Structures are given as structure tokens and as C-alpha cells.
Image (cartoon, rainbow, N blue to C red; front, side, top):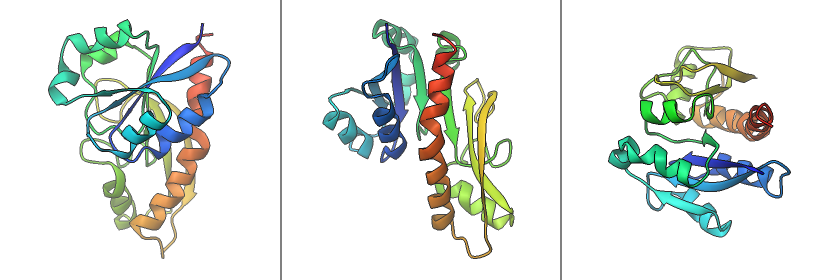
Length: 190
């Protein structure tokens, strides 16, 4: 029986696209649900094009005690946060312990926490004159960007980098590593 993945995303969905492509016709896992909190976000069109069920939510429905039950009723085994900008409630962490994974566009524990996402992260890295940045793929717990690290990859930050050029380097790492790391996490259950 294939493990069912729910992708939570709030934006364009480039990481969601890579995950969907990776797990298409996969032997032991598939993306069966996309959860989004922004109607009209690019990821909603990806879900429609791929004929994957889309669940639009808001902050209140995410916090609802019924929400984890709804995911369990749909048979979801793993939750993958791919640019999802709402904090995951404790009830969801408790329902899916060790089964929620996030990708962060920096080398945690640096540049994590509330408000540290997307361009804000890249701006902070450049302002601090860091020599490198990268990605962190980690399990999700009750705190922002805090759970156990599964994988990190780095890229150099040059003096000429802008937040936009650094974002491109980080996106490359995300697209290269996220799906294979998720696959390894799921393999632990097989």
C-alpha cells in the first residue's frame, strides 16, 4: 500500500511541482492532497493540472481540532511543507509525530523563526555578510524552524549576490534535494 503525502504550500508551488514529479508513478508513495491557504496561489493550478485533490484552508480551519482527523480520514501518512506560511498547530504535530517535514531556505539554526521566510531570509543572510547559505530539511515540531535536521546543503554567497540571485541558488538546492530526502524519510516506514 502506497504512503499518501499531503503537500502544504502557500505560493507558486515550484517545490510542490518537484515533489509531485518525483512521486508520480512511484513504487511506495504518492502525492494525494495539496493543502493551500491562499486561493489563487500557483500551487492550486498545479493541483488542478495534476488532478490532485486540493483543500483550501484558512488559519481557523488549520487550528481546528477536526483538521488532523480530516487528514487521517483521507489516509494521509506524511505532510510535506513546501513554502507553507502558517504555523503548524500542536494538534497536527501530535497526530503526525515524525511525519511532518519542512524545507527552510537557510542553514538553521541561523535565520529561522517567525517572519523568516523567502526574501526576508536572503536579505538577512546578505546583510550579515555570510560566506554561505543553503537549505535545511527538517522535521516539524511545535516551534518555528526547530525540529530535528534531516539534511543540509550549502551554496556560496558572493559579494555581488542580491536577495534575488541568492534565492536562485537556494531554489536550485531545494529542487535538487527536497524530494529525495522526503523519499528517504518515507523509506524508514516501509
